[in-house]
Length: 330
Image (tube, rainbow, N blue to C red; front, side, top):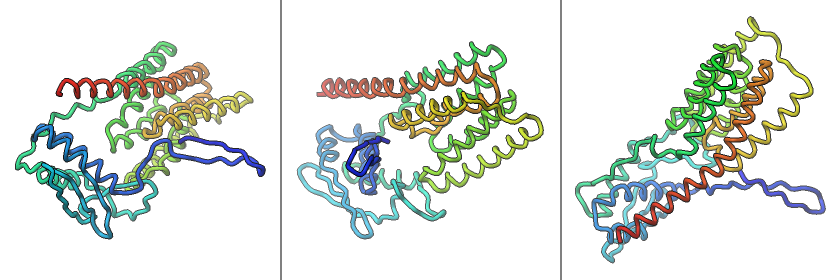
């Protein structure tokens, strides 16, 4: 989120504005879905028709249905879909527990539209890129870097911890269900006698779940997180002393909060663990492993830089590739 501060005679007013324009209108979500399927099927028709259809595509939300309008060969077409044929979550949704997104139904209806929009019987979808290769290589490299740094500093004593941190970073790329792996992975810190580290991670994870729009996912993950937290608390009560605290704790709290805000501002909040990661240093502090605290803070600062600069580089590279492909096809 982007925090804009303006002063007036009554004091300081803090305005919060989303840095990314998340659509509240489900017609925009539908247009994105249809454009994605049209783009994947661009090899099924001529480049002229593809450009004409995609450039003219409009979605109008009526009372109980969506009206889709497009142009093909200079002729205008329109089609109506009931709103229950497409399900989307958008910012600010408040729905009951029975409401869920049927991704297969969305995709099947979108494929049916593609056939009608292009006036074809069979769709030739371009081969999807594998998930691993569609990731930002710089960000992916940073996850290996954090693992190596933790292993080098702590040697063999933190081998398991290094592996846990690596999988915590990459598990959310298995969208949406990757979040389910975060609680048991955080629970794994008790294996290396860092229960407070796991507990702090679980607490922050539970808080961040409150911002999850998928209510069903929120409920399952939250209950899973609570169960894992109870296991960690049981371990602490019977096998661990109380947390270590002195004046340095407050300095550490300020540093971790600052890193959290920076990650949120640059858009890392679309994945949960980059926000949790700096707070693990507080748990490591409670566990009295100060070399781990230092390493965690250093890696957290590196992650802010890589998430910001790395994502900028990746987006610019993709734009250049698309431009080159555009001119090469023409």
